[in-house]
Length: 248
Figure (cartoon, rainbow, N blue to C red):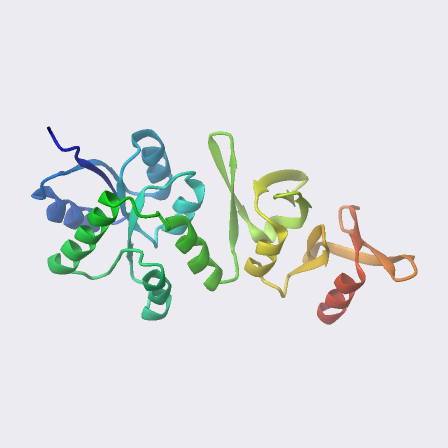
């Protein structure tokens, strides 16, 4: 019975880096390189269409980082991250036993990472790529942009354009430039990712960009309303008001 080959995708914006990976993989049996991608958007498309088993994924790339690629994939394949991150960030990879290659790397280190990934694939071990990507991103605060899938398109929303964020059950509605964009993400998580010198949780339902605040109005005893520069009115809790006073 013929053994099924492991399908691999290479993702790196540097051609020389892709060439090196291809060279190391070319003479390995039981694997097949099904795509090479030079940016994150190509990677998302290739993974969605080709359903690879394993992806070599560069982290530092223009347009989309490797972590953002993982965020956009509903079911990412097994991942060997390729990174120039320092040793402190790499601790997180080691804790979760996620494979990585620290640039520059040699053939021996490459072979060790590949063998480990192949064994994990064969034993059907849990894929922790999404968890590690979220965790490492959270350790590199603050968030500079938000990725929102809208049908087949991806909106890259710089955080400075966000007026406020509204909780809608398990979703967050990002209000920016007169439009609302919905993403499955809790406000509690966003609160830890955003710059707390600019974004304030003013209510259990709202995070406000204080640059968009025009004034605060007393609504009732201990109840206030935030009036934004575009006229939007948002409820402010007592705790939210205390947070605002510290910044204003």
